[in-house]
Amino acid sequence: MQVMLATGNADKVRELEALLACSQVTAAPAGFDPEETGTTLLQNARIKAAALRPDAPADSWVMADDSGLFVHGLDGRPGVYSSRYAGPDATYADNCNLLIEELGDRDDRGAAFACVLYCIAPDGEVLVGSGVLPGEITRQAAGADGFGYDPVFRPLGDERTLAEMTRDEKAAISHRGRAARGMARLLGIA
Image 1: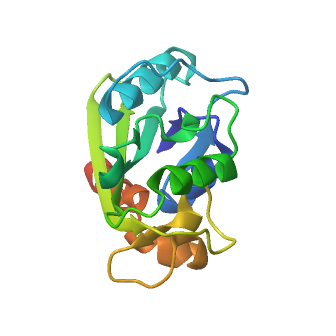
Image 2: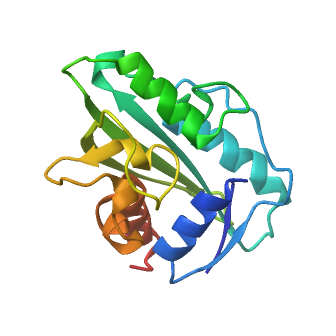
């Protein structure tokens, strides 16, 4: 099975390649960056998959990921705007720093990572998988692995941030890992 990922994010490509190891996984062509105008993860994942489908090989499955961090004390922000929370050219560190700054000394630091995978088959069939990882936002960044908000997100029941975990530990519990395992079952490759 050939899967083309509708993303230009190299970190997501690496993570999904590992999670979908039973498939041949390729990334979208260089410069692929459709405008994400949806207000939900599902809408944005659908936009990305639909934008890539015409340019993908006819026999490939097109898969798009949209993920977000939903913080209780910030009324669900940054949500669908997670990757551009601190601005369109923000770095991972910029986003983490803004999040910690906006949370300040609030006691409610509860949060959840969510992921939706939207897959379009060669024949047009659509499959959707999703995953959620509950946790909390730390008061300062910790750890050097991972990407995005991993250094400031501590999963419930663990004392480490996602950035302090090994890639295998993170994949076993992450929102994207859960969504990918669900999608692999739907695709019959699990």
